[in-house]
Image 1: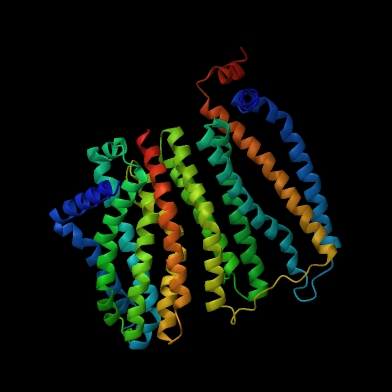
Image 2: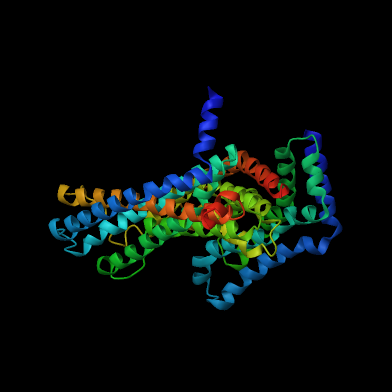
Length: 223
Length: 249
C-alpha cells in the first residue's frame, strides 16, 4: 500500500517534470495576479499592507483552483484513471498520492514564493513568516477539497466554471483564517489560534476528503 | 423480517405508488399551510405589539426568520435523501433531493431579500456583511453549485449521485463555514455595526413566528411533493405507468 502510494506519487511528479513549462504556470499566475493589485488600487505602503493578506490569499486560492484540472484530467482522458481504479490497492491511498503530488507541484511552490510577494506588498518581516506558515497549512486543504470538486466535474465538458462554483464556497473557511492570521500578525498579536484552526481543518480534510474523492471518482467512472 | 420491510420500502418508494399517494397528500399540506399561514400573518401583522426599539418594521421577521430556517432545513433534507439515494439506490430519494434544491435556494434567496429590506431601516443600508447574512449568501452559493452540477451531467443516475455527494460534502462544511464566518464577523465588524441581538421574545411575537415557521414547513412539503411528482413523470416518461397514466389505457 505504501509502495503504491510512493510509486504513484513518483509517477505524477516525473510526468509533471517532463513538461516543465506547465509546472511554472500557476506560480507565474500567482505572482501576476498579486502584481495587479498595487497597479489597480494604490502602491503606498499603507494601502499595500491593508490589502496584502487578502490579496495574497485570494490569489493563492485562484492559482490552486486553476491548476486543479491537472489532478485528474489527463488521467481521465487517457484512461489511466480507470486502470488505477481497477488496481487492488485502496483507491483512497491512490487519491492521497495524487493529491500529495498536486500539492508538491502547486501548493509548495506557492509557499516558497510567498516571501517574495510579502516583499512586494511591503509586509513586515514577522508577518511574512506567518504568511508562509498559514499557506503551508492552508494549501494542502485547498488541494484536498479541490480533489473532490475535480473528480465530480472531470467528465463534464467545459467544467472549469462549474468547478469553481462548486469548490470556492468550500474554500471560504481556509481563506478567512489564512488571511486573518497574516493580518493579526501585522499588529503584533498572537496568531496561534488561527494557525491551530488551519491545522485542525487540515486534519479534517486529510481524513475525510480522500474518502469523498474516491466515491466521486467511482461515480464519474460508472457512467 | 428484513426482507419484508425492504419489500415494503420498495413498494412504497416506487414512483408509481408515490404518484398516486402524493395526489392525496398535497391538498392536506397546501390547505393547512394556507390556513396556518394566514392566521400567523394576521397575528403577526395586526395582533403582535410593535417592538420597543424597531417599531413596526420588525414585522418582516415573520417571513425572514422562517425562510432562513427553511433554507437550512431543506439543505438537510436534500443531503439526507441524496445519501439515501446513493446508499440504498432508491430512485424516489434522488428525485426528492433534486426537487428540493430549487425550493431551498428560493428560501435562501427570500431570506436574503427580506434580510436586506429589514437592514435598510435598521442599519441604514441594504447590505452589511453581517455574519448571518453572509452565511446565508454562502448557503445560496452551495445550492447553486448543487443545481449546476445536477444539470451539467447528462446521465441522470450519475448526475444524482455526483450532486448528492456534493450535498453531503456541503453538510459537513456548513457548520465550519458558519462558525468561521461568525468569528470573522465579530473580529472585523462587531463594534461598528449596531448588531441586533435576539432579545428574549415576547410571547405575542413568538407564537405568530412559530405559526409561520410551521406554515412554511407545510408549504415546503406540499411544494416538494408537487415537484417530485413532476420529476417522477419526467424521468419515467418512457415507462409504462406514465404512458398508461397519460393515454388512459
